[in-house]
Length: 105
Image 1: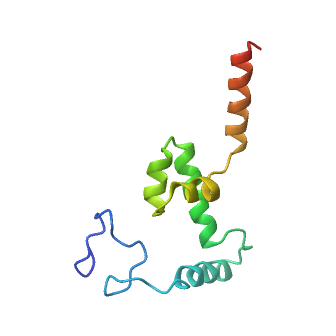
Image 2 (image 1 turned 45 degrees about the vertical axis):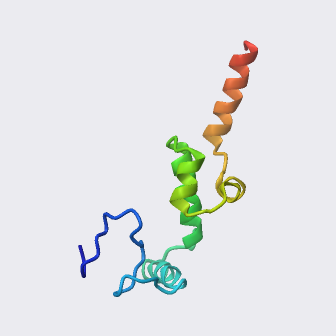
């Protein structure tokens, strides 16, 4: 707990300011750019890219579409389906294996 904020609350902001309000939308991006610069990394992911990776990891772990929708804060499940569902190479292979098993190959 920091400054009276309970980080275990499900609705607690991830990036909160000192008054437990919203930080500037640019702040996490500035942090990431600083890390990339300080450690001489090549910028291969954006903050929004982390959001996509998070959603993909949830799906791979077996989370339902409704769970991911809630986690990402989408009002409409269509947004989650259309923007954040990515088929990984492993999932693509699993789908091919399922079809082969179904067809008896």
